Image (cartoon, rainbow, N blue to C red; front, side, top):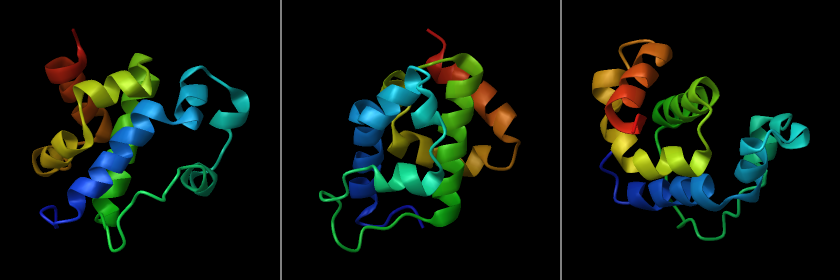
Length: 118
């Protein structure tokens, strides 16, 4: 599920989005119009031209990654780029199996204490 040869392409794209996306920067700054965008609007605002054809990510994993990133950002008021710098997508995906069995809140608390709390 996670060792697909295209995973790194997707993980790199998510990392780039978290680090460099204008929509993420506006969300980080509390811009109401950015915060009110739905998931499809956010998805359509990402430049997808660099994603390789056939690149995939498991839907369950993708939803979990998004929930973790959003919850950490909301609870700890951390910018997207900082979260991604300390917890890149491929690292977070590797932690899916031990952490997906507990609640998002508990998983995020563990991640914050172990990797984000400097």
